Image 1 (cartoon, rainbow, N blue to C red):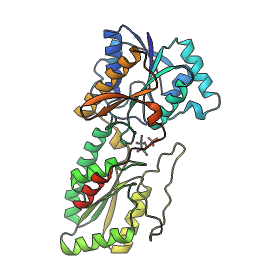
Image 2: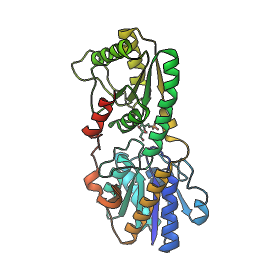
Image 3: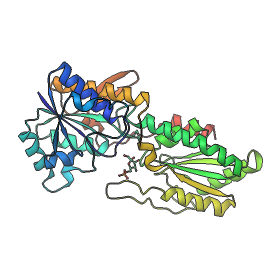
Length: 341
Ligand code: F6P
């Protein structure tokens, strides 16, 4: 069998562990030929191909980034994109295509499968908002990095008696904000799931600074927004691919808090630091399990399914059930962040 492999969308730590697992299991156990496409769907459309063998995956388990490169390119949103993809897949005699990506990449995979190509998805995104799986590759590493940042900011916040805003990634869902906020002991977590009222935020900070402490840490997801009808007016700025303009909400919160409370306030935007560097053990294991499950599924002739983890088990879920949905932080977890404020 000839199996194609691509990584699409924003990179995350753990992609190379997944690539390694697909190649090791695919070539070693099943005797397949693995063909890598460079830079996500763009490489499939352009015929940018590289062979992937055992020699290419040596010493990559613990590395960040993706050895295949990635891009935000959606064939079905580009004129002639789907046709170009199908031409390359035919020319390369691809029997099945494994797509490692977030919602955009998986959405494209689903569209390509409609043309009769066997596709298997592997979920990755530090945002952890892919529907149908408890975890996506990269999230655990991002939370670990964000938690360390909150820990470090704690000491300087306390020394200077400041309000410190830490802006973390998370466009539609606040998984990194809520989990790193709980783990790092933030005073306040602002997530897209719960639009905030700036007056309540500043009332809370003033009360805390009068009653308990003279510093506070506010962890805000980049997609956090004020509730409609409340005092702060703010429109989320988004780029070409729906990505949020980093720093915008952090800076706005800083000026609102400073003006309304008079407290010395600073903002730290963690940005792409959260997506860089070596994957945690959890992400390496998750990526390895997903890689093995994906190549096994391709071998069995499965199509239009995504690997997913549910508790201890790795399952396959239909991509059609996942596409277009967002996995939000559940109320129970949001309540814990509120309870520990
Ligand atoms: O991949 C998800 C994500 O990390 C978002 O949280 C963030 O808004 C976006 O990527 C940033 O995208 P880019 O790397 O294209 O600036």
